[in-house]
Image (cartoon, rainbow, N blue to C red; front, top):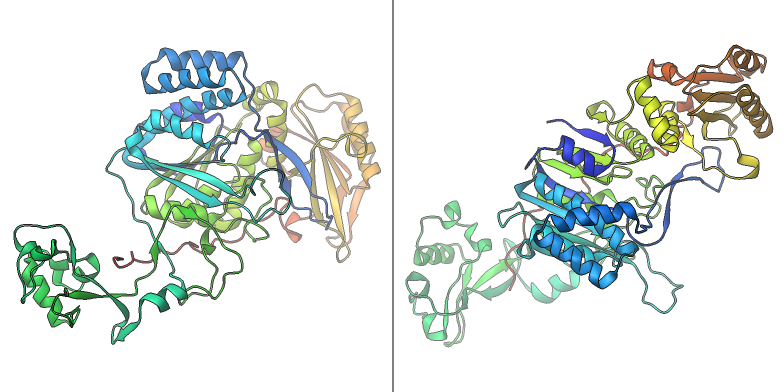
Length: 574
């Protein structure tokens, strides 16, 4: 299999392209029903403080005729999903939240279909919808396959709140397809205070504490037999040799009887006899690698110095994004460390990872770093462009993937332009590496995209203004673009179009003159006309190299390996 980015509705993509039981792990971070408009922010290369914005999607769901149709399909299909959807409608009525759940239900059913029997799914959501989504997940995956509700701290503390506690967490619902699933969590460091309080003894192996060598309950056979004068049965207990001790035995004690293992451990000075007659033998429990992951993942600022033999803050690996280099400006971007922790815990190298709402591509970036295969799906060309840029910036030639669903021919592009002009606009701008600009009234009218490049002086930057036309071209389109370029004092203006420009339009562009670059010793046409056919044939804007100041999109840092710890599991704890 190969790595693939799909442009399109994930319900359609899953049904058409992803085979039954072919995926090892799914992480999804669908748009929340939180009545917020999420924007994608892009780095300004000219040093401007205010970032330009483009609305990627609006995550408010409104009940309508299409929802009625999907709801009817779900109910008539029968089963647990039908039961829970009818219960939701009885309780909620045909409201926005029900529309959100109707959108999610068939997608979750498709996800279950593509998961292998040993696979897991992590659904990232907020507390507004998490309890409804958990009931829906129970219906799709069965309640017995619910594993954990993970609480992840997503932001710093809020000082300004009104009639509520500070909302600083998200919920991640962890389910599996069956009882037989991959699960090998890592550990986080102990605190210094815990080690100093509990592990008070030392020997040549290091610090240790004494722990019981027996467990509660009577057992027959060797685990209840008397050994060296100690009778566990009389105390209502039995011999219980933990995994942390078995590792000192050949083949972890496989094939050895209980008494044999006890004798060998005593020979290695790992067992301590009690000083009092009524006591029981204890074993030496050494400091392990840390505490195995729990279900609260909360970065704690300003806690450097509190961890044992580690110079980092508590839960540093899953820290929320503030000013980190990896932050690309995508409003709902999650930290790579969060995804790495999930992938390391529930998948192996070479496994197939799927993110059906992949946004700016954090999941696929983490999968690539950890040597997993991946599939990413998103419904906006803007997100696909961001992901391609991110993967190429972070991994260069070492990452191989293909993109499906984007136009590859003029008829494809014409179909996209007819069905969704905004998606066509984002796709066309992506072909030339331009940043979309949110349409505004007044001064910014007529600007669909922008590229910034190094000017002739130090600290001086120049703009390329782009206008995209999906429909019929008219002569005034070139005149309008020329006027915008003059108004904005831009270096170059480019018209991207589906149709071929007319003779008068070409004449208008030719009379606009040139932008002269002393740095590069060249002249560049002031107004340039490019068609979709030109772009698909590989033609680009004639302009100074943009890489002088970095990509128009904020560059992702080079991949440097996983940020999560992959330490061995800790020793057994009392």
